[in-house]
Image 1 (cartoon, one colour):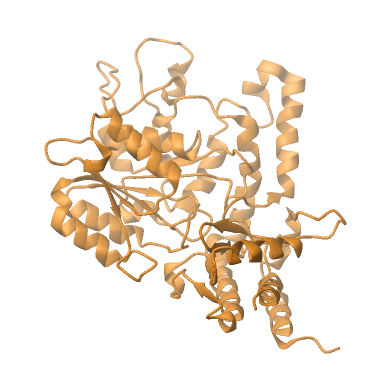
Image 2 (cartoon, rainbow, N blue to C red):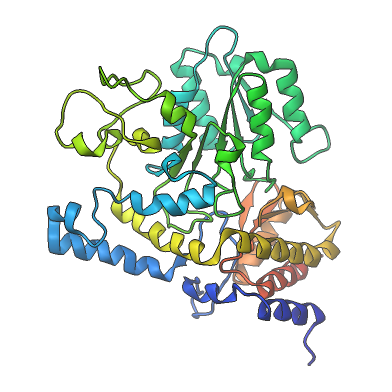
Length: 432
């Protein structure tokens, strides 16, 4: 039998892909018969870099061999462990190295950032987010409002798409701020919206926020490692992210945050009093390293974003990120983006003949999306679930967002053009 034209095209593209070798450096899940599954769920949990096992084992071996002395004598000493991650994260975030820090988890970091940057005063009390924001972001925001004694029904603004639209336009954000900006204290916006896959222009949103005196914070959970970023140049005030999606650092991996240099300098405590600034929550790991272990009562902030640390880094949860960031450094985010545009575009081409049985709700413009495509399954209420189950039975790993969306992400580090072709074929088999 002859090879289908689409498969021939996919294999030709894979053969010409300069990044194709990275696929073999990740562990791919298998079914009960040992057959490799078709994994397109890196937007939820990235695959394990094979080097992650050695990175974690190194820390376990050092713990067994050195015990407490590993803090200073481990292969990668544990006290400054977060410093192993700063250069790689700064490169992916488009930031200075002293503007980023690996710490905690996304929502903990968001709370720490909101404690610093949500400063309601007078009529300026509102927080602007997108309608349908990731639930943990919304929980964090509403609880921060409650902490300040502010009713979320009054101060939380959830900007929804216009009637008939799936996504929120930049113009809609700008228009809201033009009319109500003097009442907005903080704009919290995603780099990539988790449900639709829409990517936003961070610099444009930041300019709109700053034009009206608002703080601009960015959730990069679905953006970092997915597409090039330029947080310092964009002038964002802060950003937070997790590392278990596109950064491939494993379940419960250490998160990270960005604080623009101007805030680092503005919040530096007085050298005379050592007082903790009223707009930063402090812990001992945010204390300057030379005097941290003197255990004195005064807080002397570490340099840069490190000052927002409250606890020592969880080494076993950070080690896989060391391995993953090395792969990003080797591949280069610009090269990954180049492949991603081609790979996601190829998947879109394969899915286009399935319309109107499906609807792609992710923007068609490549600049307005990362590698995720969100596919609406048209039909009755149970149709989408049936299709999802059918994909699972065929060894296809994607995920579901109620009531009718399947999210698919061909990740350029480890997915291939043939993967995209196979997914489209599996979906075609399941649609009437």
